[in-house]
Every structure is written in C-alpha cells, then in structure tokens.
Length: 149
Image (cartoon, rainbow, N blue to C red; front, top):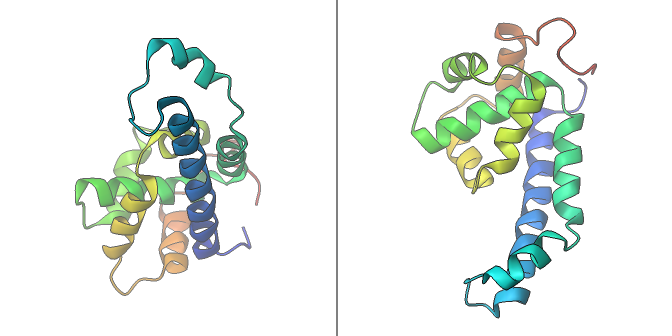
C-alpha cells in the first residue's frame, strides 16, 4: 500500500467525525435533545438515511487487512491502556481473524478516535507510518485474506 498510514488515520478521523455528527443529529431530531428515544421513534430512526455511516463502512472495507489490524491495535491499546501496541496487534489478530471482523470492531467502537488517539500516545517516538511498517512485517495478512495494495 502506497498510502501513508498517517493519512489513513487522518481520513478515518474525518469520516468518524461526520458519522458521529450525523448520528447525533438524527437522534436529536427525534428526541428534541433529551437523548431519550421512545419506542415510537426507534423504527423511524432506523430508516433515516445515514450516508456518513455508509461512507465509514466503505472506507474501512477498502483498507488492507494490515491497516485494519494496526487501527484495531491502536484502538484497543488506547482503550485498555496497553503500552506495547505492536505486541497487542498480534494478540488481537488471534481474536479478529479477518478484515471484515476487524472493520466491524472499528465501526462499532465508540469513541473510536479517542481510543486510537490514546493508543498513538503509546507509540512514543515511533511514527504512525513506521508502526504500520512494523505491523506489515511482523503480522502480514494471510495469503488470500488481505486486500491487494
């Protein structure tokens, strides 16, 4: 993959922000800002268009497995306070065994970008792009499993 991992993280931040704002806006339109969703609105909210959420899914689906593994490692390290992020990527690869499951973990986790940002802090002087290179080298996608870069 020629795209810098740091650019991927930045794009994920932009898309995540849009998806979060979209979700909050839809919720507020049904709750009047109270945050309480009555059963009478639950099904209506489900059918509201969510283009930013769809864009987030498409973005994640287009990433190679190694990029998803690196993002999940950062996200869970930030959430769980795990300082050896690279080692944690390896541990998580045993749990989330393919790109689809990795993407689902990122999509469903909230607040994903706060966790990823906290995980980045554990990299210390290692740049995001160098961290990604380490992930690719140490934990490559299984043959036929990753997307072609």
